[in-house]
Image 1 (cartoon, helix red, strand yellow):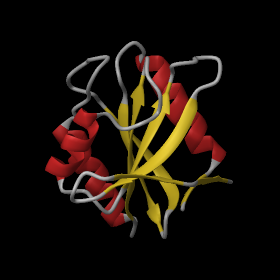
Image 2: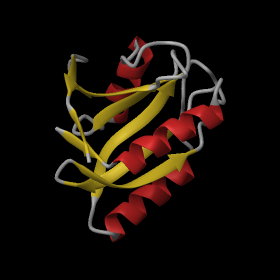
Image 3: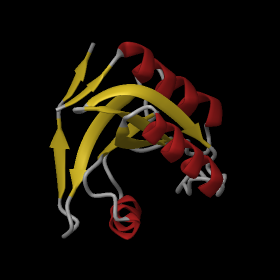
Image 4: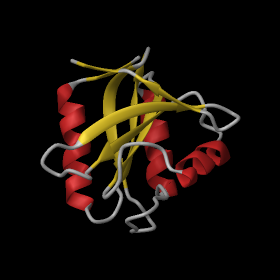
Length: 136
């Protein structure tokens, strides 16, 4: 189970809204499945259909996370016009990244009045499993 404080959930939604119509992306760091830090990362593709994290910002988040004694807990990104479910591209990117121990969190703006946040695991075969989010 992924534990996300309301302020981080609100920050992901705000980030998604600010980048709309393009997808946003970021990293959630913490310990024991609990988010303790959010890093907004620039989507270098500036696209409504895909994202690519800025490599320097990704490295900076990694170094800061390690310095604080934490680990990457999740990667998040938005779907601006579709449900919060990993696309084929999302699965392919997760497999290529090698980050299979993290959650993949999606923020859907399909209904902008009620954004949805969902968390998934993607295994080495590309199987997608929905996981629960516990809001604090």
